[in-house]
Image (tube, rainbow, N blue to C red; front, side):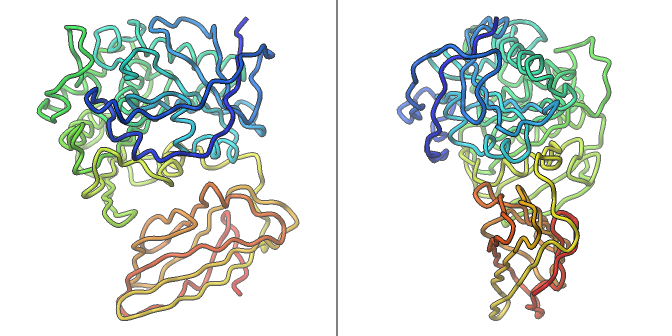
Length: 443
């Protein structure tokens, strides 16, 4: 009988930037992030407690002795989606839980989050051995697949909506999981990673300096073949799995050329052009390219962060991951009915800039848990930064998506957000707003 064991109490989130500074480099292990203290191990029922991080043992085949942590929201949906969130070198599953927003987003949308945790001394995932780079070959991917199978069996999860995301070593494992198990993972999001097979070694070493330094290059076909050869029997549909890639131009741990090599690899796997179908700037300093499609769920989406180093993950990025996965809709709470919202907006302008203050009020009798405010910026305005929400794109028809801390709006409650923008002469506030696709009264 699979046995969930002691729970880890929720702790205040710590800064990932410090935790990730030494990711993957043993020489920087002094920056090890402290995991939450282990609590007493207790017996539990067949399913884990809700709304708390819980360790599960005896989940299946586990050749590399990984540990499994899972977060099940109190409002878990029927046939929920599953998100595997993979930590960085020197980190742990509880560190990934504390340092990202996926659990609070799970509360909002009803999916389950799985946090694998390395026990080997380096706390790095195996993305280099021949066993790891082959379907069912052994090592970490097999253990993570067993964890995923346990969750899908236990909760009758939707096997068409299983996803992976990771940071640094976890990003490299995300690439490996999608290569080994394209029939399991529908999509992935990799923050500061390298292509599948780039870190390969045959001498037992976990580190590949040539790959880390960005000097391993292949043709798109060669990169694609590395993925296809991991599971030569795969006959499922392409584009699958879809891939979202994030990389900073100043990454000095897994250098920036790896970003371009990953784009080459996954566009080839998907059979789509390497020429972007769309390019935009979701946020100042970001360049987003989409391949094989122009929408939020393109086969490949790549975000380059100008002047940013290896520690690129920040608050709000998880929301963009959910949009790419398609997990930011269909949550347990209903959207407001027509006419159930009121918005007031004012601007304060100078020369070629402005700030805008926006207040959203829930005028319905139904609580809102998770909101997306739509509006169109006047011509010539471009958002340069914002607060209280994530704004995308930066101009034209914009969607402001709630932050983790202000997702809930009780009947009669209000939330204030805002943004800074450049303008070319028209500094007016937007004149119309929609909440969850329904028109709001403008005050």
